[in-house]
Amino acid sequence: MTLYIGVDFHPHQQTAAWCDKGTGEIRTIDLVHDIEKVGEFYRAFEEPAVVGVEASLRADWFEKMLTEAGHEASCREPGFDKKEGHVEAQERPTGRRVDT
Image (cartoon, rainbow, N blue to C red):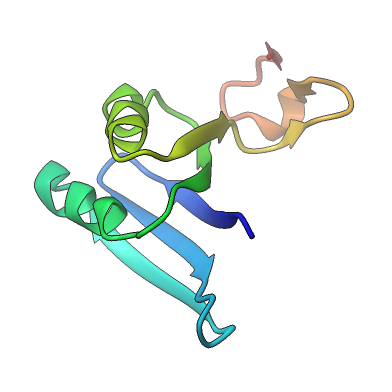
């Protein structure tokens, strides 16, 4: 069974949530963006995970770190509509439509 980790990514911290396969419990953690500590957290998972990231800013360092740890990153902006393939302008702080 694939492990999925959901991440709400902010400029200085992130909140990650996942299901503990052993207990079935939903776990969450808040991580300050200390690259070393964030890397330790994601490398601690014993199997590759699909990491869904909601981020309204560029997170290249984070995507690279996830890939190097063996995980698959799937990044989307808040309000992403998979059917329509874009984020609606009224949901964006900048008021611009973003095509994906």
